Amino acid sequence: MWRVARSAESSLRQSRRMMSTAIPGPCIVHKRGADILHDPLFNKDTAFPLTERDRLGIRGLLPPRIISFEQQYDRFMESYRSLEKNTEGQSNKVVSLAKWRILNRLHDRNETLYYRTLIDNISNFAPIIYTPTVGLVCQNYSGLFRRPRGMYFSAKDKGEMMSMIYNWPAQQVDMIVLTDGSRILGLGDLGVQGIGIPVGKLDMYVAAAGINPQRVLPVMLDVGTNNQKLLEDRLYLGLRQPRLEGEEYLSIVDEFMEAVHARWPKAIVQFEDFQMKWAFETLDRYRKKFCMFNDDIQGTAGVALAGLLGAVRSQGKPLSDFANQKIVVVGAGSAGLGVLKMALQAVSRISGSTADPHFFLLDKDGLITKERKCIDHAAVPFAKSQSEIGELGLSEGSSLLEVVKKVKPHVLLGLSGVGGVFHEEVLKAMRDSDSIKPAIFAMSNPTTNAECTAIDAFKHAGENIVFASGSPFDNVDLGSGKIGHVNQANNMYLFPGIGLGSLLAGARIITDGMMQAASQCLASYMTDEEIQKGILYPSLDSIRDITAEVGASVLRAAVAEEVAEGHGEIGPTELSHMSKDETIRYVKENMWYPVYNPLVLEK
Ligand SMILES: NC(=O)c1ccc[n+]([C@@H]2O[C@H](COP(=O)([O-])OP(=O)(O)OC[C@H]3O[C@@H](n4cnc5c(N)ncnc54)[C@H](O)[C@@H]3O)[C@@H](O)[C@H]2O)c1
Ligand SMILES: O=C(O)C[C@H](O)C(=O)O
Ligand SMILES: [Mg+2]
Image (cartoon, rainbow, N blue to C red; front, side, top):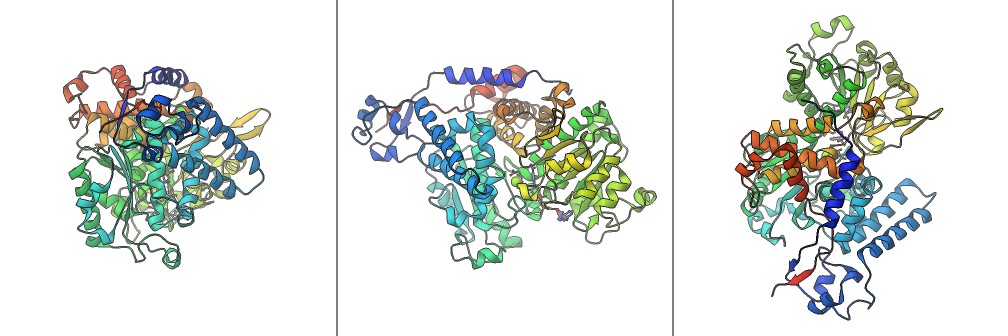
């Protein structure tokens, strides 16, 4: 079931070749003249050939020399490299924001060139357009704001959304990422400024999943903010009112979902960075009615589970040993609970075990047990009974340090949003782990909110650990030529494939089975050789390839679960007749790749 993968790099090269040799088909446009130059979806800057300049009425609106796409690409990369040089020695914040600005300017001007540079430099650029810099961008949104991107629905728009949705200029939308800004990474309630997250996630959709940028829609549901600082900030661009609660809140989300469904019934909606209560509530409310998922609960769970299974393999053990792994999860929020729920399903599926798994869950008040008053219902299955932990000398509210010392876990996984909770003593206690390769996953974002740094993890917990973090850290030089490998356990390895697979399946809904298929595909992508080196996730450079495979697995699961209704010309019967390889090929062929298409004006 869990196969070992062949070389990711070779198939990436193959898929790139396939995409770059395809002859670009014409693209119908409904505008001409300066309007074309000002539309980033169609603008080619100085690369418009003369015939097109004539056809579209832009001859004379550009300098005469025609520059090729490759020359434009080189020119941009040169200016990016000089910016890197010119900002050397400046603070991380200044450098990151300067890099974000230069990329954002290109995004505003010429999307084809922007996405090509993104795809070809994904390892370098993902940390700028996505985590962690996107967090900084959200924090500074009011100051950075130049032009809107996506749509904004506010509490004041109640009753108007069905007509507002038609203000979006694109005829077709495939992928929507929606936030209410209430829990942006580990940075808390950032109100309307959280729009940066859907924008960054959709950039990853275009780069990794080849979703056509003309068909993506970032959305902010502004229902107010409880962030006092923002409410008092005169430059704040959102509603200056406390967050709506209860039925009032839900009626806004309901109205939005109905409006989207009315205009684009096949669009997929990804819920992102909602505070826990609404994350769970909205997932429950909509998952059987719309094609939607919650990335923080479900995408994160799939990525974490793939990493946890990698950690089992790294110990030289069969996957069935997963049931014996002692896993301490720090953070009982939407992400932590999502991970444990999926891990619980995996224990019985993979190892056939019906025994209680060895999971320990902590939140800000320490170890969660059945003694806890006011326990969240989603946490109940993971609360320990006194009889289970009594002989370890643990009790309700035991501290993280106590738990690690007594449990000697195989895995310590953080989704608390609190920087540094895996402090020196906790990490040192992991040296006594019952695993020969203790796993430390500091999954909170952005970088300053990571439970520990990579350097501290290797320094205090020892060189034999396997390490993963949600935000990127450099590999650690352990001396004598040895490298401590840093994995990025981030849901970016799954959400693009979940969206793409669901889209191409024409899925009515997104099932748990489709999520499991995604996680399983990611887990089995890694070779034993890589796992032995502590490499649990593929290189970001192969994100397009892994996304195609994840997408195909999701699609096949949708077909198997009979929720696939087909996409475009390809109906469910044809999908069900595709072999695994044919499905992967089908997915790859449907991935958009940035090239300058000849533009044809339709009058
Ligand atoms: N790497 C990824 O792919 C990924 C995915 C989703 C979320 N995250 C990150 O996980 C973090 C949490 O997200 P969430 O949606 O679960 O948030 P949340 O607010 O729903 O939950 C946070 C949890 O952490 C607990 N907590 C707070 N302080 C703590 C402490 N000192 N010790 C132990 N527990 C503590 C809280 O009690 C709560 O249970 C965020 O930083 C987010 O960026 C990462
Ligand atoms: O956005 C990320 O980088 C991952 C995750 O969705 C998060 O909320 O932290
Ligand atoms: Mg998120």
